[in-house]
Figure (tube, rainbow, N blue to C red):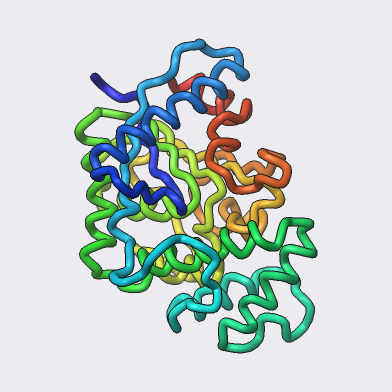
Length: 282
């Protein structure tokens, strides 16, 4: 079966007890259900589209780390540095995120939760995952895990013949680098959802290929690039950064996706606006 869409998942998608192949199949079914809702809301067909999700979460697991709970106090030095670089993009009170320890990270997260009217426990849980998985991918530009994650994306595209790629959260970073690594792959449409690509210190400078004068560009094999972000999404910052920072972005929209569930993939995937973007291509 030819998949019309290749999906690239974001953080918090580790599926324990499943092989990578089983996890990819599970996520593909979930994504197809949500995307069918988006297409239906946009006036398209009712049948779920053919979706193949490139699964890579297993590649980012740090040896010896157990569980996936709120462990902000146990971030390693590279994760703590990443947390400060990310949190510095928010307009937090002076000095809140200025230190180097995880104490300042926790203080900043609590302040951010209050300012954005988010639940502190949920925010701590979310930030802990983001500050583990994104540095695990970006820390070493030549790491086998980083190359393997990109390869899973390009293998999925080649294996299915898909001409549409939808990438959420950290998945947008993986997909961006994968498509740059394989400019021979021709993609009609790249959609990034809740993307951290434009984070000025935490993500952007670490991309491969490296930005030129602080600016990236649409991968050469991609015909059209659309980006969607919820205004409250604390990953998709700075607001409007994708369109300002990357050449070749055709659509860069900030629209309310899921109220307090600002970053959940299901809310992006089932949104009518995504269906409207996809329908002409599909």
